Length: 422
Image: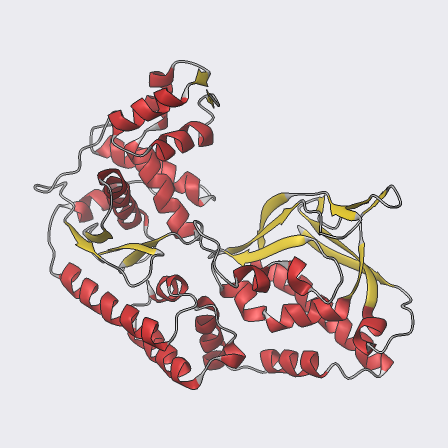
């Protein structure tokens, strides 16, 4: 199993904190072969693979953030306020040290990311770092097991554990409608059990009215929004989608039908494969691509100002026609390519949101845009060297009409060369 949480109960000194005394344990966490709980203790000059902590606090943190852990999506660009507290194990707190292990969902899997850190005023240092995608249901089973073992331990010691018992019972006893509401609240960055009534009513209304293909992304982009912000988002989406529904341009339906679909597992590889296939179908496997505003390859595009900075655009249901945020010309080209990539690569019919979220769909469209605008094979030939000065990267960006950031990432992600630091 890629994720393992093993522990041995340890004797705790007498304490008024019954939860801590009952559930003190030596905890070892392994992810994909890496021991996340590996620590270097400078005081004893020793290394070990476990931390000693009350599992009761770990279980309370898991249960209190259960829905957000499995449904709240990360912003790939900017850390969101309050996200770490609900997803990073280091925030369990209560004075006990745990590794920085971030747990966040992708559409099919869970992303676990751990990093080295030296907690302030401590003699220990967590020494491992890495990242892995793990099966959602396997991880859920591991976390469920820990919670239930803790509950059994508390019951055996006659400790109430009221919060843990009540919250876990509520989670276990939900019907499908209640679970759907909890997922929606978590996407919005809310604790489902503490959503104010006006916001809850607005959230339910939004969920049922919004297009199924965009409602989850829409809520995730509005993360942390209150009642008024959610209402503005709903009104803006309705207006933009109505405008796009009457937009015509290009013969992309037949084009899309002729493209082979990638069988790659990773979203970025699917994006690369799709971009190469699209380039080949367009008869332009390399060099700079010029977007058209007329003819069979036209992509109609309008400017818009979304109510949240996480949203970068909206793509129509039946074509790559889009409404995009204003910005530099290079940014617009990249978003146009993302709109095309989303339309060509979508698994189900319906409109789409382009955003900075760390989801498989967004990652696929970003990879498509990078490869479509800056084909790796063409870039490799242009480089012709193993060490590239930064000014060459800037010159290539001008040639392809993209940002230097896109060229740099294509070089690094495809291992085409090393970029000099000077």
